[in-house]
Image 1: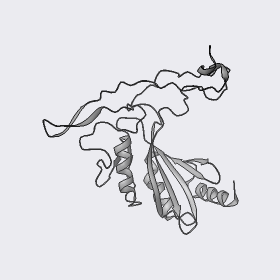
Image 2 (image 1 turned 90 degrees about the vertical axis):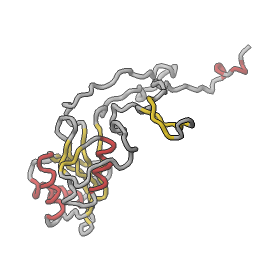
Image 3 (image 1 turned 180 degrees about the vertical axis):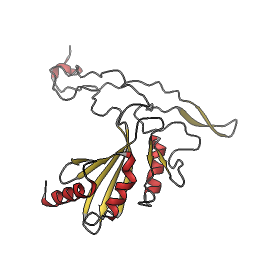
Image 4 (image 1 turned 30 degrees about the horizontal axis):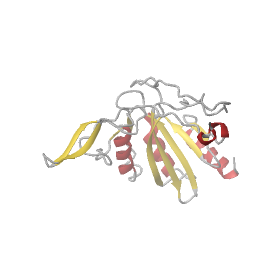
Length: 226
C-alpha cells in the first residue's frame, strides 16, 4: 500500500469510525463497504469532509453476487485427455432472502485531493432489493440508478424518476440478474399479415455449450487414417 493510500485509509477511519469494511484492490485501488442504513450519511461525509472531498461520482453500477465464488468449469487443473473438464450442472439456490446478493458500487473521485475510492453497499435481503438514492448527494446518480434498476431490479428509494432506461417498453424481468435466462423470455419479429412487430415466447431451446478440444497430434488427423 502506497503512502498516499495509507493516508486516505487513515482519514476514512478517522471520519467514519469502524462501521465499514476497508478493502484494498489491485494496485492502489481502495474500497469501502458500508451498511445500507448509513449509505446517504456516509456518502455525504465522503463528499464534504475535509481531507476526503469526493465531489464527483464517476459511475454507479449494480452487481449480482448470486454465483460469486462458484466455478462451473474445471479450468484450474490441466488434464491428460482434454475431455474431463465437464460442466458442473445445476444452479445456485435463488431466494429473495439470499444475503449479500445485490449491491450498488460507486466509483468516486476527489478532484481537489486526486483520490479515488470504490464505495459499495449491499441491499438488505428481500424482493425487490432496495437502497436509498444518492441523487441528493451526487445528482449524477440519477441515470446510473435508473440503469441499475432496469438491469438488476434494485429500487432506489427517493429517486425522482425511477423507470427503465435501456430495455424496451413492457420488458419483463431484469436481464443482468444471474438467474435471468440467457435466451431471454420473448422474441420479436415483424408480422407481415398484421403489419406490426409482435412478441412471442422464445423458441430457442436452452442448452449448455461444451468446449471442443482441438488437437494437432497426427493421431487425430483424418488424413493420417487408413
